Image (cartoon, rainbow, N blue to C red; front, top):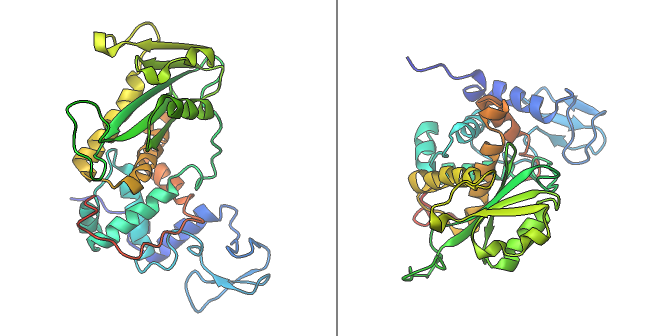
Length: 310
């Protein structure tokens, strides 16, 4: 028999109480308009409705979040968040629409709202430099998809979208979509996001030329000569991250528009940075995503299903 779903995925009241516990951990409602906590009073005529005595405005826990003004039931939102957070390679909008009983367009819109909640800025995370003294950061680049209007040349990857990943061994990953990937572009990413006293490990690409003068050390492996590990020099961790991302993009999402690529990268980064190996369960990961729903609203006026098969 299929496992019974938790109440927060099937009942609107349970879903609201669960979200209130995450958004208001102190147990006191916070007005999204003026941030007042002391003068909140419950309005009994509607479930979950509060009145702020400071600015005299009514509100609920979803006001000012990605769930605001949505016609989708809140328990459906919570279930969608759980499914997206617990699927290692993501879950397509078509599959989500079947599981939730909503239209494809609704499911597509929901997933993009949830991805916004997964961004470091939404979660209040400071983008401090990675690595540090004695720590190793791997840097690698890959190319995915195809740029609009570009045909595949006989050689090179100029027709594809460039993605850079920085992975601290035993720590987090940060992935970036870069419209142009030249040596100066890579240098900007590295010098912005990696501490100078870090041990940098890369492949033999000329994109990393000269970085040994900036970091504590820089060693590379030569993949063209089938060298993949030499001492602590390797990019195996970064390649593992790319492997999951590519399997998700090819096998699950199949297509991604350039304007949405960074959101997909944020989604895969979020799951990796909150993985089971770090002691984070699927439930904990979903709740963490719900922490980032505040202050993020997307208002797409029109969605063309033929252009967004994901």
